[in-house]
Image 1 (cartoon, rainbow, N blue to C red):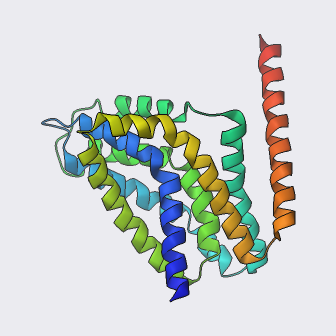
Image 2: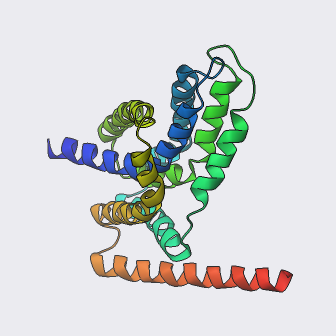
Length: 236
C-alpha cells in the first residue's frame, strides 16, 4: 500500500513539475479555437505528443532492469541539474519561445481529426518536452514494473485533467497570468526536490554527498554561464 501511495505521489509531482508550462501553451491553443482548429485537435495532439515523450523515456525503465538501483539513482542528478540551471541562469524566456512556436504552428488550414493541426500540437508538446524526458528517465529507472504501470496510468489521467483545466481556465485570465508569471519560479525547486527524492530513495548518495554534488553542479553551471558570456563578448 505504501508503495502505491509513493508511486501516486511521485508521479503526480513529476507530472506537475514538467507540465506547468504546458498549461500556458494549452491556454493559448484553446484561445485560438475556430471553425478549422477544434478542441479535439488540441486534446488528441497533446496526448499524441505526450505518448512520444513517454516512449523516448522508456530507456530508463529498461536500464533499471539491468543496472543496480544505486547506479540508476544517480540519474536523479539530471532534474537537479535542470532546476539549478534554471535558478542560476534565470531562464525565463523558455515559455515565450514555445508560445511563439505555437502561434506559428497553428497557422495552417486543417480539417480532419488526425490533421496537420493535431500533429502541430503534438510537435509542440514534444519540442517542449526535454525536461519531461530528463525527469521521466530516472523516475522510470527507479521504478519496478508495477510502479511504472501506476505512474503511466496517472500521467494519462492527469494529462486529461490538464487539458480540461486549461479549457476552463481560458475564461479566467487572472489565473493564466499568475501561472505565466510565477510558474518558472516554482518549477526549479520542484525539480530539485524530485531529483533529491530519486537519489535518496535509491541510496545512491547520502544527504551529505548529495548536498556536495548540488554544490558542484552550481559551480559548473556558473562556470558554464561565465564561459558563454565571454564567448558572446569576444564574438562582438
